[in-house]
Image (cartoon, rainbow, N blue to C red; front, top):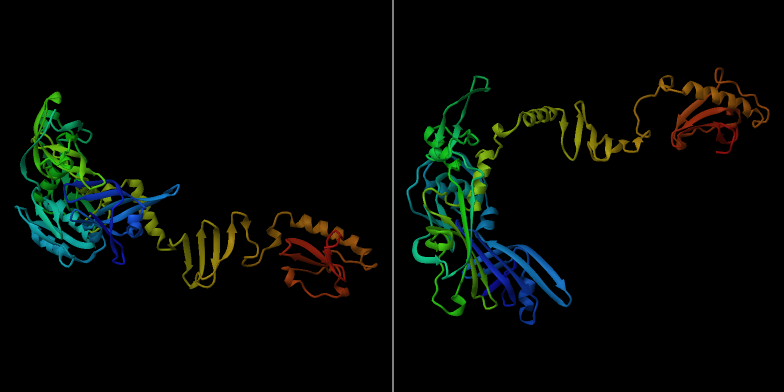
Length: 513
């Protein structure tokens, strides 16, 4: 049975489900996907299937994270992808507090889960670990962090997180050729195979805080497989938090992939829907795999199970991903662990990026930006603030350069892709420094002489004598009389020189303005 509950708490059973699939992985990851058709029996339930709605299936609650609604002719259906509620619920809870020091696994778990709505059980033997400012992150990220530090795996039983050194049990179940295996594929990957690695802990600094190039602890680790594969050096391990050689040795061994990665994927015959008493092992369980055509007789571990269900919610197909448990083959880990380890390589425990992984070019660029921030602010572009008057700003954006005199409340464009905005100017422009002004004035002087006939015989004096002039916008033109004929005016709105004829403004060539 599938039951949907929306954000308002309305619940309804949904029936018209197609292509229902469930994925289960080691470390609790569970995903659910299906297609829901709009039908008379699912009129209410269809509308309740929305983003962030909860889906209850087989005792587990999932939250819809991806929803696609499709119309085809007169039919409408929704494609749904949901994840187990444990993960988004922990992501949505932020742990602002921090804690430091040496802690047991139980102490670290209590710090993460207290007040979360989830409890935990812990079994196994684990070393203590030292933390520096554990916290200030969402609870899921913190759980992933401590799980990576102490090791161990978990499974979910309701609201209880069950943590063991390794989940699953030994079973007498068999995957066997000509019995229940339909297809089998085997993949071996040696892309990142390495047998030697160096490690560096907390760097030492001088009295001024400058790194000396030495470290409080440093070491190297050789894999036993050096005899088989030779020395293959991996990227060095750097962690500013590490102050003991024991912790550094654990980190170097954990970071080194010194054996090939083996992945087995098989599609087997699931007869549960036909009524056979056929039990399928769970994720983490160990089973026997016998496949004569590939000469395989090994104990394997289930790390992922993908099940398909029919209209009646009966399992009709199962695919599993397996990992070899022999000591010479690395146990395939879930994406959960791989992601955590990859992030730990580049991010410190407090969330800052480790500087040793940056190139020299990136470091110099970061230093330049930090220096520039003393004078500039990078807010929706680049802003510079006048130190003596913080109301005066200059902003550089994709639209151009603008100025503000009210602290950034409003801006006036100064330079855009179209050119310089002459209406936004400051100071006085000396015509003596403008190329071509002398020639233009000489030409205007000649044209003014030609205005004598237009001005009813009034003789205009030359520019070198008593010629009056001014400049401004159209609205700022002076009020003149007949005795002011010959007055030159540069109109900033029209961007050209005009002249007063005694009765009206005209072009300098005598034509009507």
